[in-house]
Image (cartoon, rainbow, N blue to C red; front, side):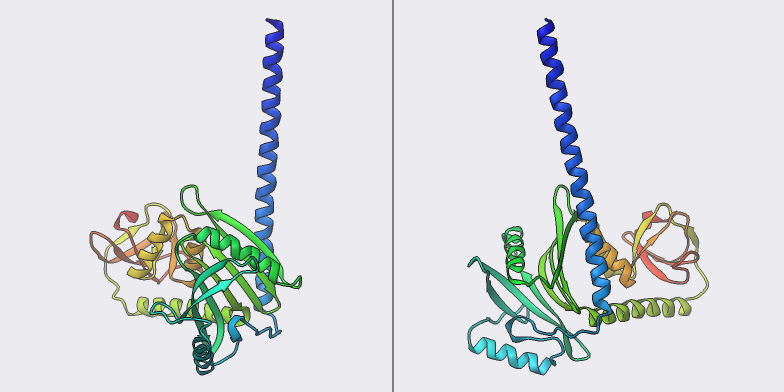
Length: 301
């Protein structure tokens, strides 16, 4: 009996040690994940203020080219059969990795004041995670050591994780994302920040203008619990989709751009209109005072 008890005690000790090792490993992984996220955010801020002009992009594109020049390049690529036409994007492209794997993309272009500042390669649905992993390894193999690489993940939906990888050099950001969709973005960071700020300022200005035109009538309510609100019906629908997928990164992006807000419990609001699905309210106090948002009727009391 004593021998049996000793064996049981030894087994319990082994299990405890194993549990501690797993816990420590998990804690170290979480710290590394947060450190990589912080590194990417710090490097992104540097890139946004960079005065460098790294402009070369895949397929003969470059930052600063006009839409006419881009169309000419697309026509030449089509003629050489390096890309193909599609109705859902600017064109389709099959990328061959260094390991000779093929990744199919839909490709779109982003312009600001008729100058290219963003090139978006959207991974087609099907084997999205596998293609993202292949593409990550391909970029690691192809990009030189002058790029700072940081990757991290966040909770996405149920047991799934969304992953983010940044490669940053001077003004250029290469951003690989696998969340609700998967895409690879080549971004001219200083111009992208201008576009982001313009959209945010426009959204805030429009919200304030609407608030100024409203009549000073309507019932006053308070927000029942902390809740998400959209700047429009469309924004609220988008928020609902992101919330159902636990896509916190997308929600934060909407809040930062002014298309959404987090209204705190007890915030006073004036009801402008309401139906079974949504209520439109004017916020009467707090940081969003004077602005209009759309939320669920159950969020106010």
